[in-house]
Length: 406
Image 1 (tube, one colour):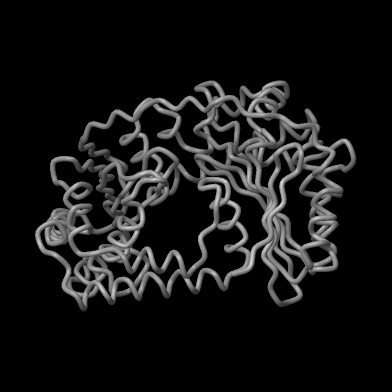
Image 2 (cartoon, one colour):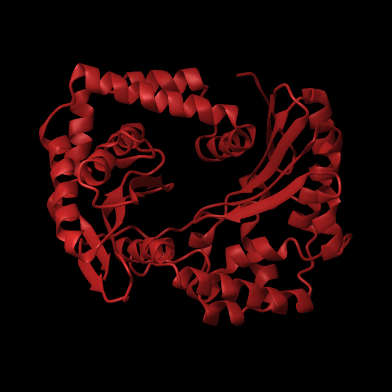
């Protein structure tokens, strides 16, 4: 994969991957998310993501929403615990329009008071929708259980109380303190020569005043396993069981990624899908997940089931985890697992929008972008002993926390 790089004097970096096709995907990744918030700012990063669409010194909200849509393009954004992304997909002849718009809403948003008050109501409704969805809410509450009293454990959306207390000057202060040019990566994927994207990038992002981030001060994770059962009066019992895991730069991250896929990843032949759903019919939704942050991570297994099957499901999950802790994968099993994950990654690379965001994040986090070939070599280098060691560290029964909605 041929990549082109460029860094502006203000610190904003660009990575471009030229591909065939009529559609361009581009976006700006900002290394700021909900874990950068104080307790009073809970939900601020996500709120600002919404408010970026509500008006700049050059455009009213309607013009922002119509700028790309009128030409068949799409403008979108998202917020995670550690990052904010503003991205667009357009016909390649509209690339400059998209770059101009992304730059404008990132650096020139005015956060109009009238729009701010309306958006408080919109996000309050979004929070209420989550509270009404136990299969979604349980993930937020499990992260609180794993990271108690820490910004990393708080929901991205905030609470109705914190959101309603936000003032315009709070948004301006958060952006000023956290939208730092040395913590931004712009990425583009599409059929545009590098000279053209470099020219457009310099034209719009070059004049941005540089702003350097002070050191991120993250509280050290202090984890204690626990079990909590809550009466939610739901039709199903919902359950999550899990543990802290490895951060993005940990040597075991790729092995954990592979092990999670074997146990309960998004494949039909994962061990948990076969044992809970296919063999016993105990659950419709059963999945495991591994989410790595810059300094730590979280592993979890989620399922929903009838109350009389809850303990049976938990017993099967513990059994499958213990198998991975006690038995090395055979040569054929390990080879199949590696091929499966490599194929999944290759398919993801064919999704150019997803690839664009992935390239930006890898440059931001690791200051480099490994090719698919290099990643596959790292996967191939994993052995059964390494996976056994990881399983014994993360799946240790005494270290697992459990959250149940009954």
